[in-house]
Amino acid sequence: MSRALGTAVLLLAAVLVLLPFVYMIAVSLAPAGALWSGSLLPRPGLAAARDNYAFALTQVPLLRYMANGAFVCGMILLLQVLIAAPAGYALAKLPFRGRGVLFGAVILALMIPIQVPAIPLYVGLAYAGLLNTYTALILPFVISAFAIFLFRQFFASYPDEVLDAARLDGFSELAIVWRLMLPAAWPAVAAFATISVIAHWNDLYWPLVVITDTDMMTPPLGLAAFRSSGESTGNPGALMAGGVMVTAPLVIGFAFFQRHLIRGLGIGAT
Amino acid sequence: MTAVPDTAAPAATAPDRGDTGRAGALLAGPAAFLLAALLFLPSSGVLLLSLTDYRFGMPDFGFAGLANYRAMLGDARVVNALGNTFLYVGVVTPLSIVLGLILAVLIEAQGRLRGLLRGVFFLPVTATLVAMATAWEVMLHPSFGLVNTALAALGFDKQRFLTDPDIALWSLAAIGVWKLMGYNVLLFIAGMSQIPRDLYEAAAIDGADGGWRRFTLVTWPLLGPVTLFVTTITLIRAFSEFETVAVLTNGGPNGATDMMLFTLYEEAFRYFDIGLAAAIAVAFLGFVAALSILKVRLFDRRVHYV
Image (cartoon, rainbow over all chains, first blue to last red; front, side, top):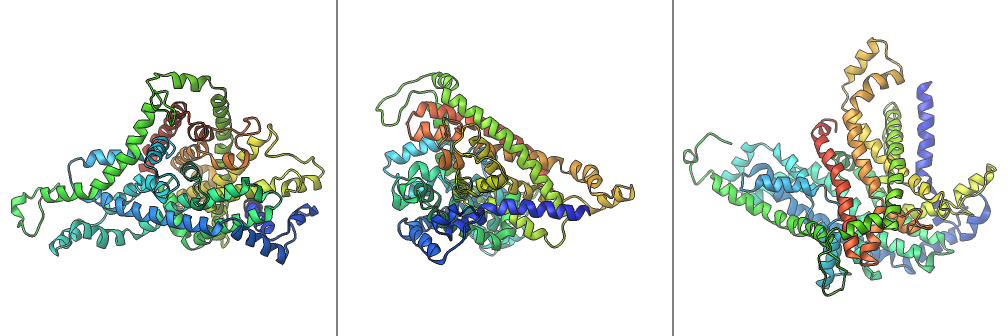
């Protein structure tokens, strides 16, 4: 009995949580006039659906935004791993001068939100003439204290005997990182990759600071600009179509990477 | 580390501490440099800027002491934004934690639906908040939105959810709960999966086999550390709310939904009052760092539950 009640509560809650998604899709498929019909969900129409998505793709450079977002997320992730993995390995396995200080710095860095260094970073990028560039979108995030911390934790449990054997086989320390450590830490890499991509695909704050050129906008910034432009007033269908297309890659990706994502967020990303 | 003296190992086959020391410094070097250049230097810069009267584009500037902090605490906009932020945090944090806990407990009691339900509640975490905020905006539209259509059908008055100064902040809080609840569901489920099964069996032998008594006797006490951790994370996330304000209300109507990060953004990058903005950034850092220290202190205990 109590389990049936629990199921009922859960299903009701699930409907409420899914409602904005369902509504977004429904509006994206319907003519603007259908919103005024008084029914809860507007009736979809094939022509209206085509118009809405065509508008979002042609009148608004949505594909360009998504390509920008994909490139920026990819570069950020690549550089984060390239820089953090050797550092995580050094912190876990190589005694060197300043190791304790660096680890303390990593812990400290975990506590600093991007909004704090944002002002000097902006001033620096402005003086360097780098506003409205991919560099401006990517640079502040290439160093991830969380990635260093995560990799260090994973690498620490790797057996030292294997490392010694690899060194005897002539592996350089860098080769050990790429060919032994990272493959062994694959779950950590996958978990980190999912949370990094989610964070940067969805980020609005930093792109809003450094980007004003339409051509350089990322999906959330482009969508926000579309929303506040005259183009979207009276055309909620096109705006929702844009929302569906911006949200779809991550939601669909989530279906495949749910395990990694849950592990990654469980480890404690912010 | 090792008691074996370096001389005991053949130099050609086993690297000594000097080698690994150099390799370690070399491998950690780029990260250390970038941490300093991209994080610590600019963050210290903000501390210094908060003590100056710098305005972006001005050729010279001078030391201003604590003037920016005094200005911040006397600034009607900042004070209003802080009040709104605390109200928002005060509503969103407990609601998203309690609802997250209830849903997590109910989900874990489910059979086949479990995986599907986890995915559903977790969807808002992955979804692009800017896109979902615009969806909420259409849903809350004063004339045709789904919520007002439903209210009208039930005989209630329609509401201007995002433009009525008495309601707007609550509307944003509802969106905030919608977003943060799913993340908390996940963290609680992760915590519950670490509770040993035999504790429930022991509780059942003692007569506690009902759902509620199982919860009060076993689940809740053992979720203590997880709950503390969830609380610090939720506080930080609620305190950092920016998207819904920037996209849906611009802090309006009449500052009713102005919050700390939005004020910081506007003072810094719209009005270029860098000194004041830096002071706000330092205050924001103080709050987040205090919570983060708490979070890191809980870290050791938490990893056992994940």
